[in-house]
Length: 412
Image 1 (tube, rainbow, N blue to C red):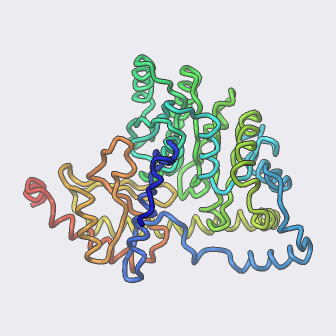
Image 2 (cartoon, rainbow, N blue to C red):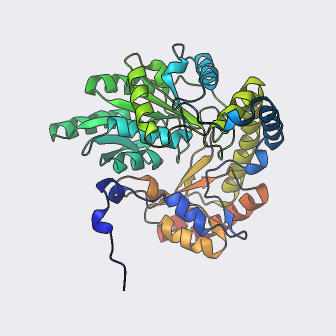
Image 3 (tube, one colour):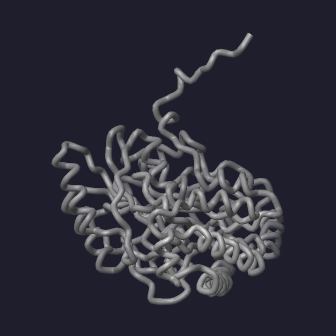
């Protein structure tokens, strides 16, 4: 007898949740013969395994079983003190340990923030395009996500104001804005200082929360560091989300939230019913890694490593891609975003590329309005130079073969 479906018992939140397009793609192209430029994950070859192993052995000798005991939901206090100190050095002069919550990556931080601030039917604004983790957390709460264009200066704050006014006039509850200010995923662009200040002004004007997701900010290859939105915030409107997945190691699943004390307290309560506490051994290892000066050294090493890979990919794209395709030059992070001529479908390009053992991420999954069919994202983070060269050459050839006739004639 066939089992009866239980789908009628699923929660509204579970029905609203959407799977990660990148996870699906990476599962599809996990075969070793695939030259993948899809995953935006750090290169395992750069993980500080020797240092982690040495620290783990020393901690075991010092702490024994205590290192594997339940920890506080807020996170190891000494670690929060260290992270608060680092944030003060970045310009967040008021950062204190009690304003921080250690999370299982910034993804959990965004999920907890959405749980605290987003009710069913609330609207959160986000970039067109943007990483879908933030919108996914909002939708899982029954919220709605409305897109605002992203250009070379980041989120378009003029368009944001117009859209928020339109929505409020229509009776919608606009609750906040999700933004990745530094080397945005997927476009690689950085929100300009002028727009950072304007975004803070708009949050005050329209009574909004800003979800500032900053996993890439410490991986700046060139140019000057810009102040975080949180450092410009004097009203407690910014929930600042950070990750150690790109600067330390992703598998330990460590990140943190810095926000107004009341908001942090609400997130702590929410986390108590989610997982009780963040992985305790990982926190001990990270604390010692920071104390020994190894995190700063690892960040410098990562910057040099990924800057070289970015430069190599850009060089290959200039050599093999037609002039009809355009792309950005990120000042940091992991991503190059490509715009094909209007009329070309990146999904079709993807199917053709996979047949030739090359993979990337189509851009449409980053557009909450379903747009971006002519865009795609490349990541130089994991692939070696040989794979980058091969994949870019194949993609360049496929793009040229499928250019609309008018572009071919123009190129000629």
